[in-house]
Image 1 (cartoon, rainbow, N blue to C red):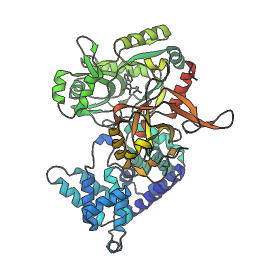
Image 2 (cartoon, rainbow, N blue to C red; image 1 turned 120 degrees about the horizontal axis):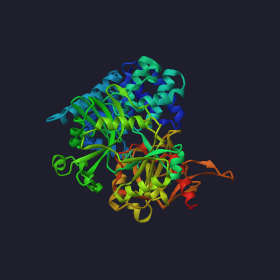
Image 3 (tube, helix red, strand yellow; image 1 turned 90 degrees about the vertical axis):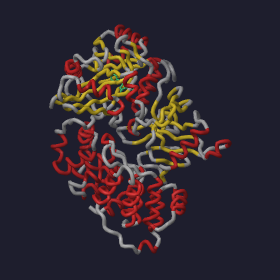
Length: 588
Ligand code: AMP
């Protein structure tokens, strides 16, 4: 397939504002690609070279790209910088240069999807001394032989700014439409995706072997499984009822979620958002090597814990592992402990569909004898009083709360279902737990803020069923001057010209941005509001009403939650659930 066709399709995707139309456009493209090429096409459309867990990055800084554009178009470095500033988009900048008549005369080489992808791969794989010059050379060569439209997307790709507005769900529906003639196989495709977190592999299997292969898709080692997530409910009574009268209640530990894959002498660890984090946890890696099964996938929470006194240490101790350096010293000073809570695979057998009790029993057996990997503390009960006591004692021990588990439920990969329900102290009152929101736009400042050109954010939750970001709040407080500047710089890079197709909003910010960054927000409560689209429905008076946050403020020190993708933000369903819980405790 020629890259020209891909660039034309991307331009169309960028210009439409209906998600369904986007799916149709993308499915036409996918249909035309050959089985062997589709994987590359899908990664490209996701804006990556490989899934994040493979850990390959483009390694192309903006300066490298600007230099390459200069060489490819004959413009000076200053011209490139000026144009980039003017458009706020490197793609538009190179497009405008290449459209100039004298450059148009240059013969474009007709390049294929593989030509572009393979060059990008080569650029990413170049490292060490002299790699910068090589990257510039490869990039400038490919830009020089592209048409203006091709160059636009080639330039945007390695700096993560494709701006197509396409999410994984959109690609999945487009795949379903392309290869089965309808969007109905979306869920089956999604389930398979949840088992391997690799959309390229799913597309390739589908194109080459059809839906049968997808229906029987199996987990495999070193492809992380999308993690199961927990719902929330406020009281033991409600949780026990929801779980048909009896459940397991596990302590909830606040550390790093680790999905451990082991095959013989190789152990890899993946984070909650499916990145490889093995280097952060040499102690856990070593402990996993020493457990009995040859091949295993298990999950747990790693945290600082004094194994001899049974004392949990503050989260500040655990978080030290986030640093790039000094891990070796930390391992000696404060080795981490893994509280294992799930088993997904042993020696060729998948445990995904097994009930919780079977997974738990075989997990305990698999890690027996290990000092640093032990099962989570838990009880199994049908008594709310016993439940409550266990919860209270967990809190007293410095833990966050509990996670209740449905004894008969399978492992629900990639979804928030009532087979896991968390209960933290804060749910028992008003909204004192935080929510994770996606930034979809920003407003210019008024008054003293106008000098920053930044006045606040428009934020949304994720509606999984609709695959849409629905707005829930405008956030204008909690920012320092420094943060305002940082936010503006970050968001300016992902401004899009019109409302992204997957954003549902009544409000119109001064700038729309690609829904990409997640922030943590605290609010006093959830209220109904006609200005937001989260969970929007007609009320008794026939007026459209959604949910909104009251007194929202941004929390957390880094502000952008790097461990969450936009689709991992708090969901519309969760907001509705929290609203219902609020009502129960008397907040209207
Ligand atoms: P939250 O991040 O508040 O949605 O809570 C879910 C997270 O709690 C999971 O992603 C795990 O990282 C963590 N966690 C701690 N203890 C457990 C447990 N016993 N079972 C499941 N998840 C747990």
